[in-house]
Each structure stands twice: as C-alpha cells, then as structure tokens.
Length: 156
Length: 154
Image (cartoon, rainbow over all chains, first blue to last red; front, side, top):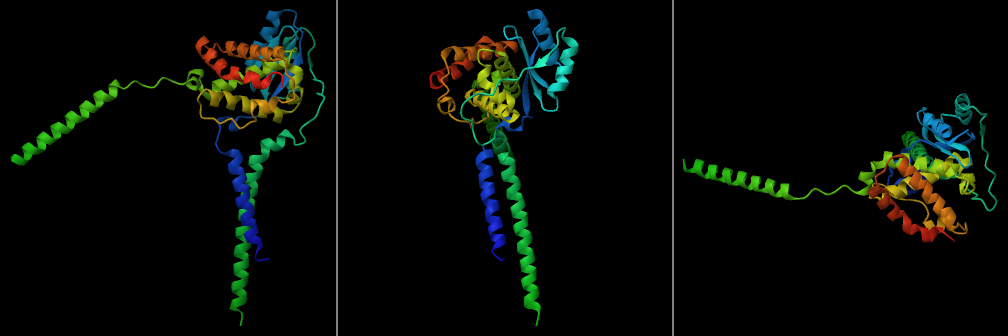
C-alpha cells in the first residue's frame, strides 16, 4: 500500500514525458478549432450562379472556406463543427434554385488504420490529464499514509 | 575644477562613442522578411489551406482519394494541421512538421502524375483566391515541388 503513491507519481512522470513528446515543440496549428468539409451537390445553372453561392457562403459565420467546381457541380464548404451540415444545407437551399443534397463519398477500398484519428488528436490532452490526475492522487495517498503512520506511532 | 574637466571630457567621449555606435547601427541593413512573413503568417496560411482542401474535395479528379478524410473531422483536422505545419515550417515560420515523411505517407497509394498535377492546380487556385503575389507563389511552389518524387508512383 505504501508503494502505491510512488507508482502513481512514476505514472504521472511517464505521462508527462509522453505529453512533452507529442505536444512540444509547439505549433500554432495545435490551437485551431476543428473543421469539417461538407460537399453539396448543387449543379448551379451556370458558373456565375455557383460562384455567387460560394461567395455568399464565405460570409457565413463558421465557414472558413467555400468553393464551387463547375465540372463536378459540387459546392464544398469548410466549416467549424458548431455549424452542422444540415443547417448549412438549409441556408444553401434558400439561395439555390435547384434542390441541394449532401454528397456522400463512397467508402474507399483497402486497408484502414486500426487506430482512429480521434485518438491521435486527443492523445496530448489524455496524457496531460492522466499526468495531473495521477500526480494529485499520488500526493493525496502519500499524505494520508504519512498521517496514518504518525497516528500509529503516537499511540502508546 | 580639474575633476570637472576630466568628467566633462569623459562624458563627451562617451556620448561621441554612443553616437558613432548609432550611426553604425543605422548602416546595418534590416533583414528582409522571410516567406512565412511575406505570406501573412499563420492565419493567412490557414485560410489558404482551408481553401485548398475545399478545392480538392470539389475536384472529381482526386476527391475519391480523400473520401475517408472528409468522412471524419478528426482526420480532416490531422491533414489540415499537417499541411499548415508543412507550409509554415517550409517557409521559415515557427512551426514544426510532425507528420510522416512524404514517402511514408504516400507509399502504396500509386498516385499518378495527373492526380498530382490536379492537386497542384487546386493549390494554385487557392493561392489565386487570396491574391498571393507571383513571387510568393513561386517561392512556395519551389519548396513543395521537390516532394513530387516522393508522392508520384509510390
């Protein structure tokens, strides 16, 4: 039982080392908000109508980029996650003369990475959180152990 | 009186030395801004990368390659951050690219030259969207161009 605080502090140091490995050196891109890319099948009647849609979308809150491709008939928006695809679709529907649908890309064939991308993205936060939590737990356990031992020693 | 004269001459010499120093500093040429600064820093690079990714996803010639990335916002973010870091670091900015090497990242993908050219076209369109001057555009493409051998036909 007395060794537990030591192991917790050791785990904390290991997590801290891991966090330093992935988070340092710092890059400003680490602080950027998550974005999503959504493609809408618009098929505007002409190029200028499609480009006007993209231009209008660029001014919407949460939209970081917009483009209309004439040959594919796709309007693609890069947007922050607080703007849902459905919400953006309803806004495009108002401006577009034709009905708009969200393009679903076919699942690519071939091998997939078994580790989800979210694990890579959340790894620094998980490591730092674990490091702080285990350090605090280790200190608390150490302090309670010391108190218990001192009380035992005080007893006649 | 003699002490005052010594002090006065010492002060005048010090001031003369300082003024000479200032003149010397004035003659030193100020360093010219690097490509990162000329591009407009991290916010400008982020805007160009977002536009580039939107162009790629709208491009039927290559968007099938990015289907899995589009489906997962975390994958989108990983690609976005890697692109930003790569351009930022390559242009002399305060970033470090932490992703795989281009050879590792594209191994087994068998990307054709036509697909690579379509990707470069989408990047140029994104740079044009933000009116990036020709000099800066060429400097950036010169940094990214040598990566072609590690991407095509791997």
